[in-house]
Length: 237
Image 1 (cartoon, rainbow, N blue to C red):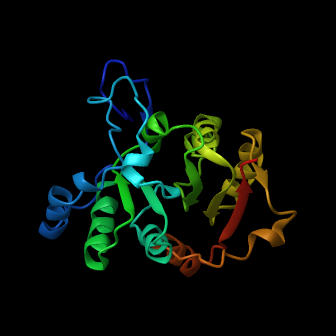
Image 2: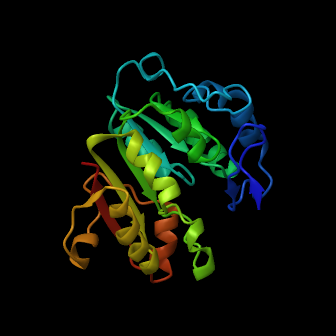
């Protein structure tokens, strides 16, 4: 368990996930060294932006709608959305550097032009996003933290949902995909408490993916192991 940042003015934020996995190959190291800085959404760092000055969304994203993916894993869905919707910009947040390197490899291979990358905690991005600046948000196969005593570590807690609600535009969509039934339970309990409105009425409304859904490697693993994906759509009023 470590703090997510070190600046003396930064709030204490415990971070429980992995930051590094197996050793990166040379190509992945090159992606991080050569490509990552240019793909930054702006000055998110507590070291260089301790006053948490909001990002200049107009200057960075040229007036395009901006979407947000929270924890993009290996980047499959993020790149798919960028390639499918070239008229938008999409920010991806992911603290696991192996996943960041995988995404950068995909971006370089495809030449995707509309993806921004924050290699860290989404909460630090929330700090500097202006109110109502995000048009759509995605939470795909988040860390399930299956033990009951760890449920407070899940993203679907008010610590994360309240700032997400603030930065989303009225009428925008928040999508959640998970294969963990108890994560569905907590999502349906906590997300509406933050002000979101679920667009379903019962379990049958969670069984069909979105028309533009791109299955991730985590979902493929879940399917092979016999788990059932759930797809939940919320609207920010």
